[in-house]
Amino acid sequence: EPEVTQTPSHQVTQMGQEVILRCVPISNHLYFYWYRQILGQKVEFLVSFYNNEISEKSEIFDDQFSVERPDGSNFTLKIRSTKLEDSAMYFCASGHYGYTFGSGTRLTVV
Amino acid sequence: DQQVKQNSPSLSVQEGRISILNCDYTNSMFDYFLWYKKYPAEGPTFLISISSIKDKNEDGRFTVFLNKSAKHLSLHIVPSQPGDSAVYFCAASVYGSGNTGKLIFGQGTTLQVKP
Figure (tube, rainbow over the protein chains, first blue to last red):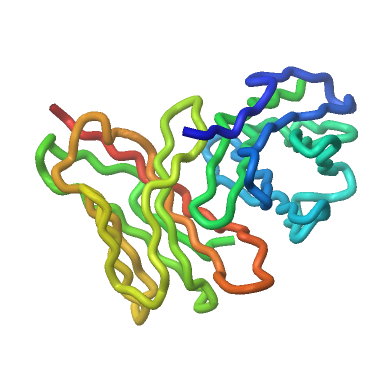
């Protein structure tokens, strides 16, 4: 069964550093998403991406966040200057309705 | 943001019995609902969905019921198996052209199925 692949599985970074979370969506999918889950909280929508542009973003997705599909296969989430409160599981997903999630990247900001 | 609520944080059932997980929503614009299952250290896995034009959708042991007037949906698992033990998330979306596929999730219900 096709999978969404996320790397790394765990990233530890210093506060203020930039991080890039990587995702390889399912190859024939056109819609891509990032969600996050802070420990003990809901899974929260961050951004949706379609036709090489952001189609919707949440209030969480401020200027510190950006997404890119640099080469037609990878889909990345960049956090420019990480804060302690960015510590969470970040999930990439692809598809449309009933879409497929990756296993997530656990980001720990120290 | 409490648009989708799962009021029971946990549920414990005996193997072979029925598990019923509940979900309420407040936004009347939602017209497509999904259930996801999540194991620790994995991403959510899609289980079953229902459009607001239906009141029931069944897939094997899983059935989702939708009560639009009450803004309530439920997931029934029959019979429950120990491998069903996981966190179950209800999610809602607005279907139709121009929508972005954004899902609003509930807080999740941890289901434990005891052998």
